[in-house]
Length: 392
Image (cartoon, rainbow, N blue to C red; front, side):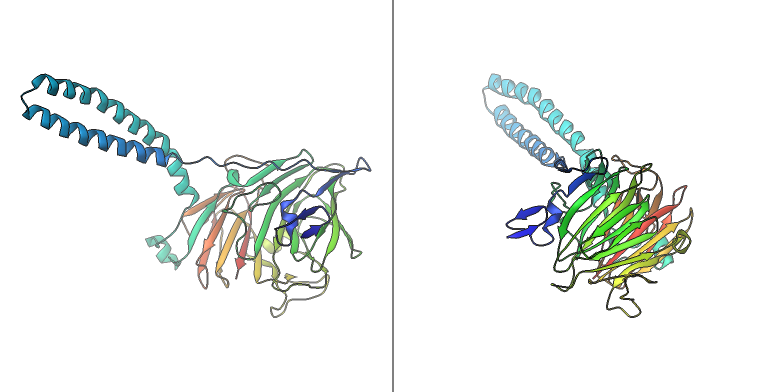
């Protein structure tokens, strides 16, 4: 039985809090109330099966009609042959109509399915010129297909299954368990809740976020800050937007540790926009890597007890960055810096390896990444802020 500060669940492994709604606390009221349940996102099923069935029906009718007509004409019962011929003529357009209708209905769904599973299997001439490996396979994670909930005080997107959003296709990716893009309204926040056996860090996009935990840490983070909590054997913390004028926009990221029963620790780092502009800056790295500081505050990447590297960039229009992967897989996420949007991605745009284009809120899984190079270029009209995960 797994128990956290706000969940008891008999089957899910730590941190099981990923499947629960943290308590919500309004700073305008001293009482703590549980946030409403996250809605489940449903996905439309493809009409491809209907299309295939219609085609088989058409084939069956056509073959049957042809056989019956041939036999009828060869017999002496001409009236029977004429009757069957007329019946075949009447039914064939109907079946063809069914197949055509079904095929038309399935085309946009099939097209979308192909788009959402974009795979680069071979290098184009342009990619070959750039030295880009054909071994990389890119899989689109479109913005409108992410889990989503609007609680009023909190607007959130889930790249992976979280709270009541559940999709068996998107549970985790290697050690990467959670990417939530959250917006918390002014004077609102997450009440005190528990975590264990998880590396949890926040990437602040805009606004201010107060962190307070059972280790005695109290800090207000702003744009450029990266805060990491190694939950280890267990911690409790709260996160609030103390600002009375604007919401806070941040990414909450969870990674599974490679070692269990760690002593809880807390780290903070800061990276300026200038440091991230038109380059990839490593902001999170395995604690055992050479040169990684184990101090609470310091320079360089935030340490993490997992084989995951995270890099950030703010790309200007027409600029590009390249990255050679150390791990076997990767993930690229384009942050929604132009504003909250639940529909098709818009705003700034980037292109990966000259082929797959992402809008704000979109992401891309990268398969077969080991020792392969990826090129990311800004093909939009404004600055694009993005994250690149390198996962063992």
